[in-house]
Length: 258
Ligand code: ADP
Image (tube, rainbow, N blue to C red; front, side, top):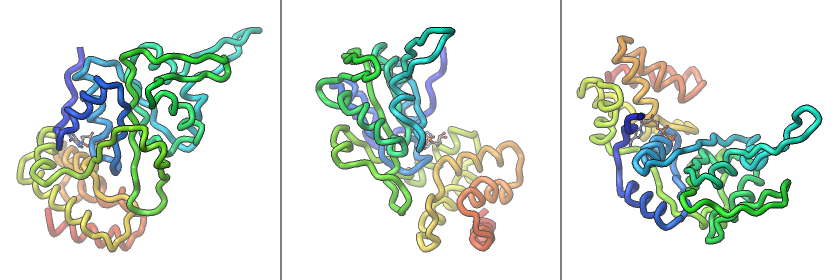
């Protein structure tokens, strides 16, 4: 038996998830990377006693990857269910992480599962599947306040109930760092201050900013004995940018703060 993953609720997302599940409404988690979306789904799957399948979508993810394919076995071809088909049949929770990254045919494949029909069409078999009553679809995407992110069409968004994830308030983020890593409170506070400072430096035009994940990584490295400034540099500053000048400026800033 696995222990429940640690998740610190921020708003009413636990209740929303439970009600969405009971009412068979698919859920969309919006927000930047590293804000706890995946952790939240893992936590909810555990809480509801559901088996969970995660698909990390990328540019090459196609409906075939989700629905299934024929493979050649000896002289015969055999059909292999993809993870979505398995989840639909067995009533599992499927989590499509970064769904907007996937090819458009993925969105087409999930459409009939996101309305009252809760059906899935397997064109290669000419079959329509009715979803198991316990099947749940959860997807995440990063709306991207900066350019370069893929958008999800409004008509697709409207098929889901949606929750926004943001960076937690400082006291909650401190709590998360301590719970995740066992770091001392004063160091956790300093890391969170650094995170917020950099998040407010919008003029740097960073495509991604400091996520809770990066701060957790810094805390882990410090906890295992790496000098604080080095830990911040390698886990917070360097992952944010490749521009040497920005790295130097951010490092100076962080060094003053920890
Ligand atoms: P996302 O799926 O949004 O990219 P993750 O769920 O992978 O983000 O979160 C990254 C890390 O941040 C987690 O591994 C966890 O350590 C931490 N984290 C962020 N938010 C929370 C939260 N509310 N409760 C617990 N841990 C969190």
